[in-house]
Image (cartoon, rainbow, N blue to C red; front, side, top):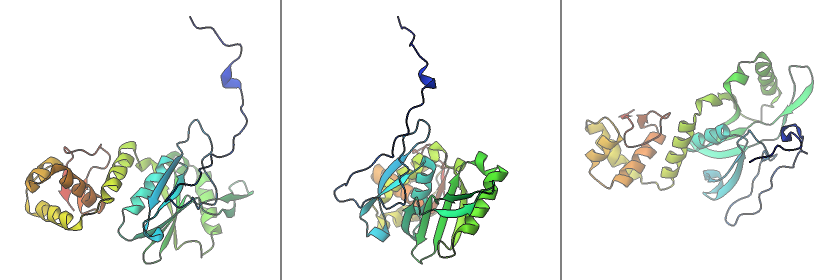
Length: 243
């Protein structure tokens, strides 16, 4: 038999705790963001990942993301062949908010491509983006960012990054860690010359080790050379086609 507590714990306001600190990791470059988003939360999904990039010569570096959506945007960028560098939680931009008060905003990500072109990324959920005050703040933030901050500033609706889409991005990202360009060319050539409906059919047409063909298909999907439905859990039954 359970007994009631002497007080309602939901009414207790606990003291705000400092962000979690991640210690050194052997062989991994430390976090370089302006601020740490790893505050304790009952609702937000904070994520830390060690990701290698061309800018770090393939050495993993720690990145902290304030949400799973931000993480998904970053992984999606890493799959772009022209991608070079990733920065998160950037130094704040001063602006006047919709209430007429001075405020600051840190862009979620900045993506640099091999040609040097840089995109600053603002990620927010769809409900928030529909609010006039949010749109006014975004306009003020973009105007407040100096020209040297980025070549382009973009807003991304995080609602498009469903749970299945995020999981598939991670699955494709894992497959890219073991590149095999020659084999990928073989699978793509087979796809262009073979009639099939789903991943299982393309694997059968290749008539080789299934796991190797599946990873190749994932890489080709990530390179947008094969198409599929990103919003369903990736499996051998997924519809797939040549783009």
